[in-house]
Image 1 (tube, helix red, strand yellow):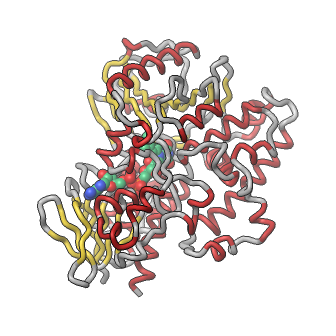
Image 2 (cartoon, rainbow, N blue to C red):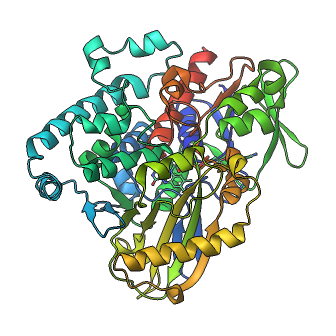
Image 3 (cartoon, helix red, strand yellow):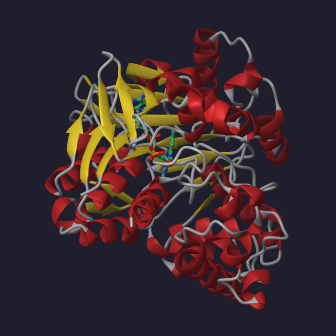
Length: 495
Ligand SMILES: Cc1cc2nc3c(=O)[nH]c(=O)nc-3n(C[C@H](O)[C@H](O)[C@H](O)COP(=O)(O)OP(=O)(O)OC[C@H]3O[C@@H](n4cnc5c(N)ncnc54)[C@H](O)[C@@H]3O)c2cc1C
């Protein structure tokens, strides 16, 4: 029996630990915080319940598969509430566009911007659907190290059809004429912490996936999914130790590896799976990696996705004029992405995202009140330098409220009964996110598949990675799939 230590109880760590235990390993999961979930964590205060990070649950099939593969049934563990219609996008001139998983509703909405869009929308759904299936069946979940073998899983015409030669925006432009439709669908690049002008066109599969598989909220919030995944791991025999911080990954006299805990004690294992962000693992937990194989240089070279400042507002009442999920675009759409990816300061008018989860699940707030989550992207910490976060917090709160009011909401600052805020520095300190990057390593073309940080260390045998910055990438579904890929890698090497 292989003895495995998993460091970190994010979704990737929980998934890897569960699969490894199911495959017969003895698994111990060590999480530094008091609860599992990582970025998908929980704030409970004054009767309000907030998810700290993820608020959009896509691709439920991934979680159905995780539970089915490990002796359970997702739908017996969790109730999924459909959020339909989906996201509403707002522009500063008062225009808005709302997505829907119901085709007729979506087509009529798109026709307001482009009356002849119908046949092109159908053709786009077909193309993006084909690429979604090709990607998930043959590319995303393949533990391929070799670019030729990875891309060789597709025929030439399939490969050319993916749109790797164009940006997301360019690829959408082959189907849609309306700038508003392109801006709305292109903004899904933000899910990967990227810009629609930089990321490969293949990622038009993101909005397709949401439209096709729907948008969901577990009853009790996203954290109810984390709780269900934590139970699944425990039921499969994973020993979970919370409030247990790992300080170092060490050699173990030539036999496997060991981790050193905060109290100085050592725990040995045949294999270690780090769910801590890859560049944080390389630079803080395994400095041997730095000297042995240039891991420090790899961390410095790794392009990271932006940071985020997040507000959690408990509102005294239900405010009007906002649905469950909304995105607010700035006046200058393209420039705002450039500022985010290359700028050195927080924009005066950043795009932002608002979620009122208690609209769909009223149990998340006390009777008559509501929860509001606001996410504002920022450049990563190393590009921001010294920031007066208190001043930014005040400025951004005022900015968001003013914009919401301008769009017709009746919210005012007085409605905020309680507030919590995580700056990019909090995200770094709370969860080990390198450079405060919210979504991990970037998803540019040459940081995908075999070009992405692999889920095992070549120079430090016995060290594996799982989570947002390794393969296949970021987001709850991908890190959950990635957990299985890491488990398969460990077992493959153990044979
Ligand atoms: C604000 C925000 C919004 C998001 N929105 C969405 C969304 O709507 N939908 C979606 O699908 N995805 C979303 N994401 C992305 C998604 O949350 C992540 O991709 C995913 O949760 C990352 O999981 P992970 O496996 O990388 O683990 P992480 O969440 O990175 O967890 C790593 C774990 O390791 C622990 N750890 C760190 N250092 C140590 C140590 N030394 N010892 C022990 N433990 C340690 C941490 O405490 C943490 O629990 C969002 C992310 C953020 C930040």
